[in-house]
Amino acid sequence: MRGPGIARRWAVPAALAIVGAVLVFIGAPTVAAVAPLKHPYLALGDSITFGYVSSPSAADGSEPYANAANFTGYPTYVGASLGLQTVNAACPGETSTSLLALGAPDAGCASYSGANPLHIPYSGLTQLQFAAAYLQSHPDTKLVTVAIGINDIGLAVPRCGGLRNTACLQRSLPLVLSTLRTNLTTIVHTLRATGAGATIVLVNYYALEYRNAEAVTIVRSLDASIAQVGAQEHLRVADSFDAFKLASDATNGDACTSGLFPSGASTLGPCDLHPNDAGQHVLASAVEAALR
Image (cartoon, rainbow, N blue to C red; front, top):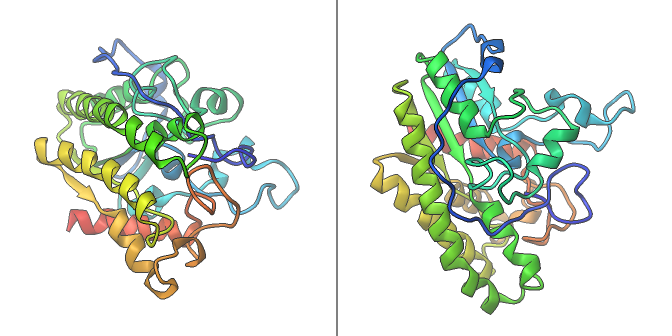
């Protein structure tokens, strides 16, 4: 997720997803490179999961993108809290379809990963192929979180000429969300087919302006689709929507000025769409609450 004009730090939100096929994993030698000492926690998702970097340049003046460790996301805090070894496989700009199929429409994941390292290298594989191989190699994995979908909506925004064309966005949503539900179900089934037995938690999305009824309606529609798959597959859903709403009460529902986001507009709202470190802690708390 990322808006135009700030793509140097994050991938641009994108694409109206099309239904991805069920993938059959046939091998991934890169998986053996990951050897956690504790029970693993595998985090899947987009740039929100990938993490936040506080400055466009590192302390030594170098670009932060050359080292994925410069980005810290909620999985780091979840793993530390639960005593698990975090394996963050997220890719900035990932959509539910590109997570399933190489070359599928994305919001910049392919270009980002082609130019910059991810937390975990898996070149030539989809995120789901890596995840399936990892779970097969690490059946002691205790937790998998899946946070995907906002980039599926993201491409509809520029096609509709921006957020204010709500009529166009509402017309686009049914197909986008139907595709997301199909893809998310495929993702869950593929993870379960590995036999690892890890607890799978879906993570929903937050709003930037809880006073903006039209924007909230779009996010709620996305979260309802995630919840539908969660109910269908008997999974827990980490509720970041309510967590950020509660954290924004002091600013009258304006999450952008709540101290949870950096400044700078995005294509999906009036401020940077990616939570800063404080916001990442809110996300981590939502995941931990879902597990409780």
